[in-house]
Image (tube, rainbow, N blue to C red; front, side, top):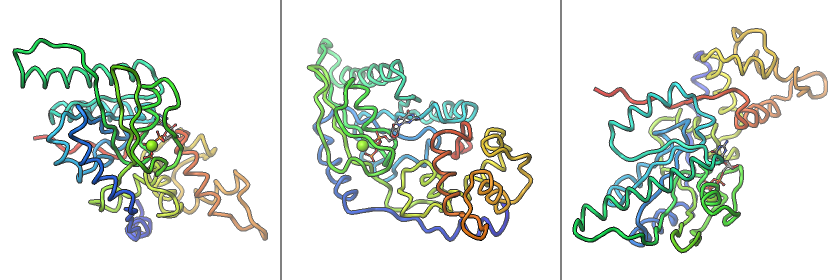
Length: 296
Ligand SMILES: Nc1nc2c(ncn2[C@@H]2O[C@H](COP(=O)(O)OP(=O)(O)OP(=O)(O)O)[C@@H](O)[C@H]2O)c(=O)[nH]1
Ligand SMILES: [Mg+2]
């Protein structure tokens, strides 16, 4: 990344913690005793940074399954490394594309076995019997919590949207006699460890665009795919190479996509928006921003 580029990115102080999130955290803690297991939904492109450290301590007291969603948008080679990392960590996890029915079935069966194993460990003499499973679904905004619930329900039981902050209040959803789900509003950590993490979370749209603006995440994405030497990115904008600077690439995209204002000036605001839209559709190919920490 060029110096001026990293300087611009370091100016991005990202802090999005609206009132409903503090309330949501309180309510999650209150409802924990009512559920058998918590499904923590993360984004497979940012497996660690899309977790929420504020909830980690709370989750340690409860059966917990990490569901890494949007697997279909993530770089499979890096996912292999994450798979090894999560296995060593020991918390149960599963990578899924929630629009794939077999993934959804696996989530349910894995959740049931975790709960059953815990029950057996605390009451080894009681014979197992199928009882109603109550699951709470938590995670950062826009990670796909409500979509997963709808997939489990096989109907539109709760509203989804391609923007963060759709769900604002908790809602119980009775799936059938064997399963109840609690949908919860997405919650951000109150602060992020590194400023770059804010750009990752903006790129995946866990943070609304009006908080950060489109420019920094769009510039970050160009730098990222430039460094990755991404053929998909080049093809998407018919670029002949990725040698050019971020500013030059922005100009090339403006011309290609007709983002030109009066007097022939490029309309960069429109280009930034376009880049975010295209990235979020998966047009730049599969990627992972977050890499597993080194394990000794
Ligand atoms: N490509 C892809 N998109 C997904 C997947 N799961 C969810 N989405 C999309 O992600 C967006 C957000 O989904 P929601 O279910 O509303 O997310 P949420 O976590 O409930 O969001 P909040 O209520 O804002 O916290 C929607 O546009 C979904 O269609 C997935 O596995 N793959
Ligand atoms: Mg939701």
